[in-house]
Image (tube, rainbow, N blue to C red; front, side, top):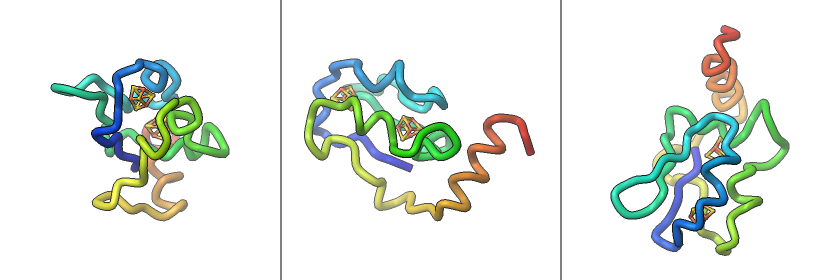
Length: 83
Ligand code: SF4
Ligand code: SF4
């Protein structure tokens, strides 16, 4: 899963673009629900939130949630109800 860092300026660009509705407004900045973030596997070639975020290195790979491509795709299938 990806992680939104403290660099976030709450510009609201990423939230509507997430295909998994994984991005939610937290107490101070936007946050990503790691259970819903597939790093865009199954939807796009690249994480779309990173593509639209105007701040460099604002959205990073969550060091506490490193997942294989296989695991991310399995999450995609589960979220889609295809399993
Ligand atoms: Fe959503 Fe994709 Fe960003 Fe994960 S990487 S939060 S699935 S837009
Ligand atoms: Fe924050 Fe980047 Fe999302 Fe804007 S696009 S709300 S700066 S994480």
